[in-house]
Length: 112
Image (cartoon, rainbow, N blue to C red; front, side):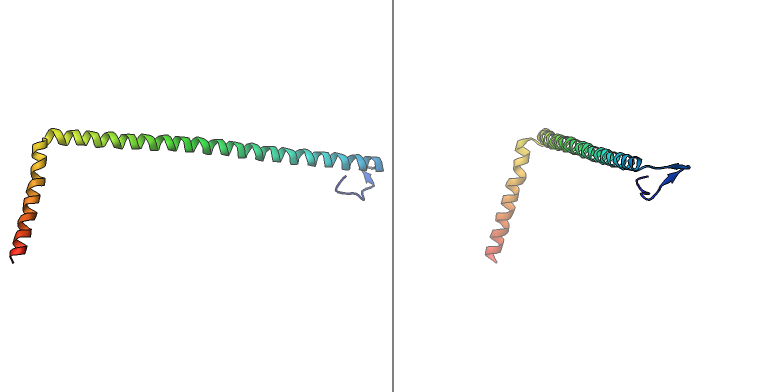
């Protein structure tokens, strides 16, 4: 009846002004109620999204920390493997031979 304000009869019954006013009031109350429900649902949805984003960032941070720690341990393990396979006295020789090669090349270059 709210959408048909000029309606005077419905199913052979006349509609009074009081019934029209009551129908309008009921419609306005329902519209306010459902608008309130919509806003409540939107607020709850936004709160859930915030919680999920926070959880996601926390998990990503933990994964990043675990990845860093794993890389650190991997480097340590590789370093220990290198020390076992190539003792320190063998690891120094290539550096010394490299220096001697460079000095030899510098000497050749200065002689020419």
